[in-house]
Image (cartoon, rainbow, N blue to C red; front, side, top):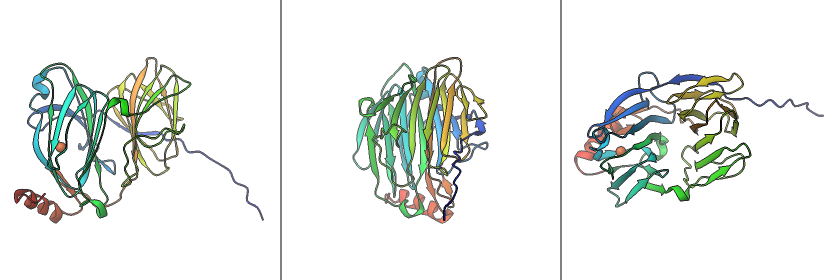
Length: 287
Ligand code: FE2
């Protein structure tokens, strides 16, 4: 007996785009909220994506003084500038350009994120990644990597792929380890007109965010412009072509959790009761 197999690779297409909305957070930091808005409330397991970019100190100087988190992970990726972080587990450090901080809040952490500069450009992203129900109360943990510790894959097309987490098709593995939702987080610089391809797990949720230039996505070649997020359909192949100018974009993916989400400010749990408990634990210094 034998079977005739037809192998079909499904290429991910652009199914939704959003520019996000202006938002203010922390002690008055101006930013763009891209995930976590009425237009795109979440992309399981991604709960929030903020983009900040300003050379006006009044937009960022107040920073994010001490505040708590429980139940998920915060990922700060800085493109320009310097930020100092400090948390209740004793971790402290400065994130510099092209550095990443992947913090697992787990059962609870109190931290601050303050600009370590009084002027100049501050630019980067903060992504919130949900934790599975079974791991929401895990021990807080922290992974930080500077520019030089993040591998950059150089492809024949001239593409430069910074691998924060996940594995590229050419076998480069990023330094952040995350077995909760097995994320991929790539920062890709792609010369004009060139094609970038990457394999992802078929059912991972995935998005791209265009930092510079513009791109065409998938077989349908739908366009995505600068400063826009594009949600990708399911499939194992990502194919992105840079437009007329050199482009830079993030490709981020992870396994969806498909669990109930209860949000309350800095806490993201599975039920309203668990969120109220988190506020109560924070008030009584039990985070
Ligand atoms: Fe935070």
